[in-house]
Length: 337
Image (cartoon, rainbow, N blue to C red; front, side, top):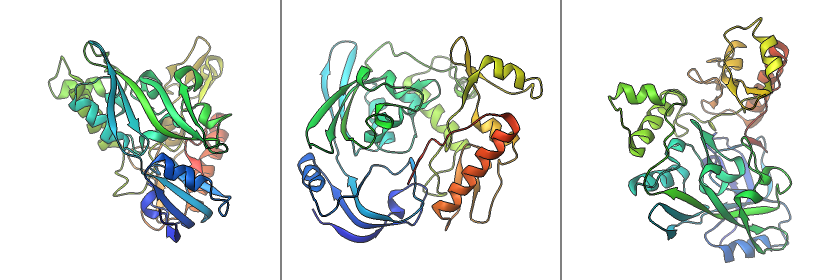
């Protein structure tokens, strides 16, 4: 374990923001993590996973702790299901590919989502009709205060739309070290009617898709719409899709009859934030070395050299404009530091 000084965080965040950590350390196991958390010389600590859901707006004056835990293992199975334990430092998409190679179903629709496994439950990541909570069984987490290990079952996590206990009452109190998933071994429940998956499969002439086919379709769709963070800095969807009442939606469609929506409950609907942002005139708009992606208005991009503060100011301008046009408040999905 070696603590580095004045380390650039550019390689560790998908936005490619060149903020610096005054102190930086990478840990590979729980005992190392406990030792680092106990260091009293560094009271201000930041836990870093895949860096895919954060916007750094300034240098970090404390200790950044990069989680490097690795490992995937089957811990239980029967004829129909398998439970897999995944360490927090595993890259999410690599884990998805591992499940597909083993013909374990449940998370194929979540292919190509950036980030690491340990941060996925915090956000309750989701795409194309599937959320992490659908296959989540439990997770292990260390208490930052006591250094004790705790287990959180699905019901403990209070999962919601891009939300969990780790973003609410437990925010900043725990570090997830591993996650258990319950996946299907046969009779996979497929979700092919959300978004463009069905048309992508049809284009490939696939009428009876496997989970491998679904994953490939999702990857193809995402690659056509979303920029690769290794090429253009971004963190995927910057904003949540807002949920509004059906009454408010009906009033809005009087002026915007083409406004899309998805049912959430008997009283509420979800409106695509990307549609709102595009209608507000931001899709494809550039501001020098940053802007809004040309193919997906939900994605803010760093073309190279942008500061986190510049991207934050753009996000706030988008929020203000959308609210003025539609009376809808859209929330940032990323953590702003």
